[in-house]
Image (cartoon, rainbow, N blue to C red; front, side, top):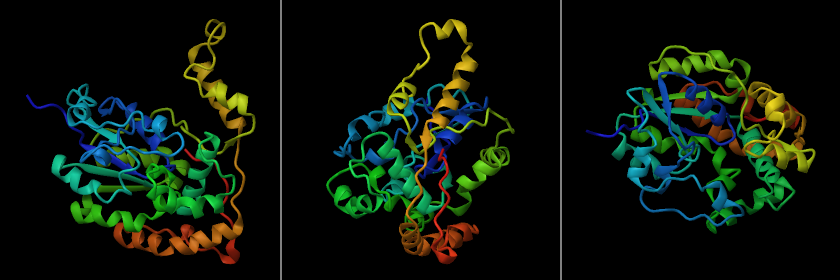
Length: 311
């Protein structure tokens, strides 16, 4: 008897709501998400990649390297629609061919975000986790190519991960256009119910509404001790377990994380320069996927993108 395989892959992009969408789908009774979020198996399928950037060993500890181990992630699917999210898939040009060999009938969920806001949120994420040693975003951008060439994991590609048009080409060459559903983080924030129902329709399952909570929000910490405390698996243990029910502990945890986050604005000059740089990429996505992405293009006067929490 053959082992279950995923019916769909969430292929990107980092800092665009993939964690939230993964959890929304995991709450659906007819959808089975992989036991490990972000296994990134198809990044390593032709040989394990060993990354050497600060904290890369910890952040990639859940990566899956063997086909048998990858299949085991879906053993509990039980006839349900199965899938996984690995946000690094989109930007790796070797992945589409690997997926085609193993999963020729797969469908793909693609969540995109304003490329400048995505790159900056990526930087803030690594600063928040004390992995990014450089405090200046411009300096970090200048170091990007050198770091990636030295073997730092792809998540350090602030600029590279936002080159959506370039990264889409090998995917659309390997699979028909109707295998892809593209969403934007704006949609997921503005109308999460409608966006999720589009995903349900694409996967062929009934509509189901979970708790539309934002997960893995961005920003940097106001109080470092509180960030460390809230990062624990059970930050409210001890006596609080007997005083507060589980749902109130979860609500308190979410509220404190939001209150402890701050979102320093991007420098307007950096915003304007990157917006111009990404313009061909944005236009390529518009042509390839039939989307209207005017809000991602250069802005009159070089106005900076609004700084907002990032799922």
